[in-house]
Image (cartoon, rainbow, N blue to C red; front, side, top):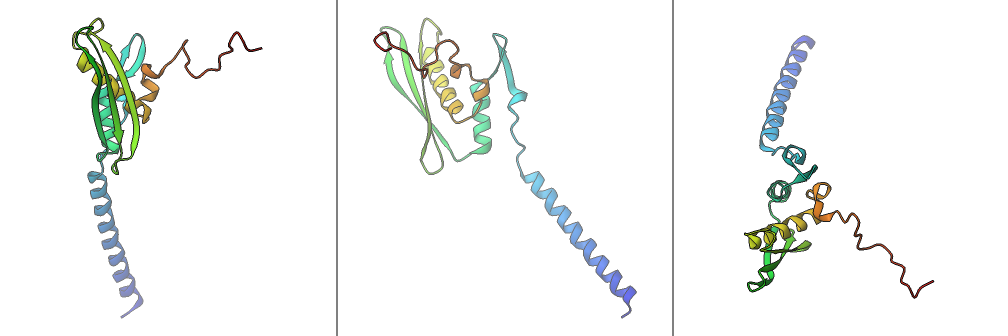
Length: 155
């Protein structure tokens, strides 16, 4: 076999392998879910960008389909018409990732039970990093809770 025939055979093998590699890469690209882009789902509320809880859920599920979210009422007061809900996010091993709580009253929303539950889920997801930058519930503005406070009896 001459060198020219050997080169033709080698080129044909390389071309075949490149074709197989190209098909494999195309299949991987098709099988891979596109990355979630939260900026495509922002809503303006009071002039600020907000990522609704439903989109935070989609984002979290796209990255961690095996994580779980559970909600539970902490307190339901039908007489005073308020409720407090807690949401917990756990990873695939059951390890606690974050919790969030939310209180709502009938004064704020007719469907205050659902709003409190959704709000607790939103806070827990924000603590996981899903929508944190768009979560007004984490903006403490003028009431910073972890700032050092000088008491009157201290110098």
